Image 1 (cartoon, rainbow, N blue to C red):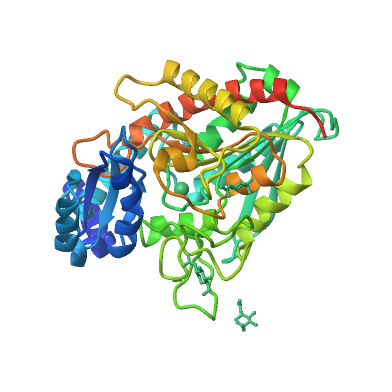
Image 2 (cartoon, rainbow, N blue to C red):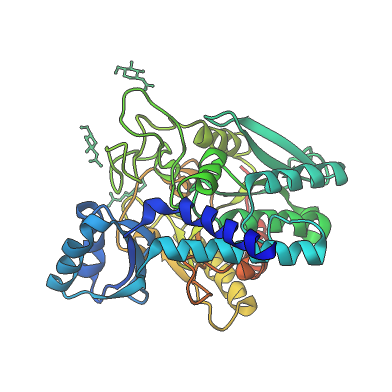
Length: 426
Ligand SMILES: *[C@@H]1O[C@H](CO)[C@@H](O)[C@H](O)[C@H]1NC(C)=O
Ligand SMILES: *[C@@H]1O[C@H](CO)[C@@H](O)[C@H](O)[C@H]1NC(C)=O
Ligand SMILES: *[C@@H]1O[C@H](CO)[C@@H](O)[C@H](O)[C@H]1NC(C)=O
Ligand SMILES: [Zn+2]
């Protein structure tokens, strides 16, 4: 009986990632600024999917479709790039990921009797059940709100956490979102872990006394769902626009700040399609409306992405430093140093800096730039750690999810306190 179940599971898993037959992924290590900058045009020419940004000190990871393998390798060799294979068989690596997730699920159920949003890569329903659970269990402090329905009609939930029901307007607000990029599965757990630390396992009561919190674990529920049911590497929303060919918009190119000017695509089938207009997506409009509602109180805005172990700040569309660059850098470094203290020896250390200076190319319409442009003094994009911990899997092994969530929380806590000290109410 047991053998049958295992075989059945394997067949299901096998059929699921069929679309990645023949795909490979590569580490690429730029040695010069020119090589770093060339990655953007290589990405366009070979329709690469950039999964981790490269840096002069660190390799990036790109996903390459079967039809471009030869051309891509030739181009790398012509340009004298250092590269090596990351996964020679992406489809199979994803199957190993699924097995690791399933094993983890069984272990967690055996140990806790229930599934938690930060102990594994979880289906949307597990995350939503958790939000409903904490909102009812801690009703005096937490309010669960749906900002709107997503394009496909799912609630875009956020949790407001406050000891005064947001009525003490002298308190600064800390705003964190995750999951705008559907496939970046390590990002939602860092936000549900923050919820856990603010409500269930309170070891830093000052963070709730001093601040109000707005936390959005999954900005893009349609895309997130789709990565579980259909396409593991789906990044965008799932909106359908009659005027264009393909569904979905890159939410982190859709904000109204130098919209669609650089690092974006006009091709709706591309992963960085900026949309037909700024804020074309209900998912980004929900974030925008919350940012504006609490604009004069938001001391710190974080948007969680993966991967690369980087903390990036404005301006990401042109590489110029903002007027608040010194504080952005000081707080960024403080968060990174605290994460380092709580990290594991084999995790990469965080790089902190202006987005263009760190990753070598510019992109417009990102939420961190937008938030900063409307007046939020400290706004960052986190690229969370994503090393593949297992021998064969593609993504961060699920057994490290809680570690990443824990260390990230330590960074958030330090960032919030300094942001609070620096905050001057408008
Ligand atoms: C499609 O294009 C037409 C004409 O430019 C425009 O009026 C309409 O609003 C567009 N539809 C969407 C969904 O953007
Ligand atoms: C997109 O198309 C518009 C209008 O044709 C053009 O001005 C813009 O430069 C294009 N953007 C990109 C990133 O190619
Ligand atoms: C880059 O954008 C910022 C924000 O809009 C602006 O203040 C700065 O002057 C721009 N830099 C350049 C070189 O255009
Ligand atoms: Zn992302």
